[in-house]
Image 1 (tube, rainbow, N blue to C red):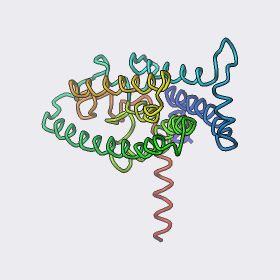
Image 2: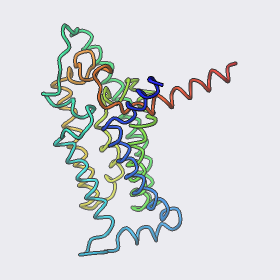
Image 3: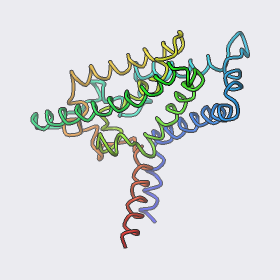
Length: 260
């Protein structure tokens, strides 16, 4: 009973609660947009662009949500996960006598893996860009793709991340080399739509990405659990990895049962 109670307490970490609330919020945005998209693309475009109050349309509200979200990453606060706050100097708790050689190996390995992720992502989205330029898909399709990425961002954080599992091989989001690439990935489709709202989202996401990469280049020791004690499991207060561990455990149990 005591072990079960401890597990329940861990499941109630403030950061995990916050992430679950954010996930539900993203679901609330995604579901109606997806519903209108599947039912009638023209209707979806009309619903998203028709002004409701003071010439504000739902698309403007969505733009504001996206923009505020990115600004919080440019100017991180205590409400954010250690996965993001590890870039801050005061959140660096140096591990005694860590190996510079091991740190260099970590940097080289993670940079190579990150490059693979970037090439895959750009190649994947280039397909949609080509389809858009050929007028096979339109603005509404790229908007739907962006909203899908918006939801998938938190699916990757909470439940399953293909980049983590198959390419980066990092232990958790707190230790993720590309954690703050999410907005750049989310708004990649917006590059192809030529207007202020779409380009402002894409280029702001580039600012988020550049800030992350500059700090990584200048202070890689903040990103490695071998040199930053705040990234070690024993010192983690976020515990946002628990659902991922449950999913992995269920998958491993299923594979073992099939082998028998």
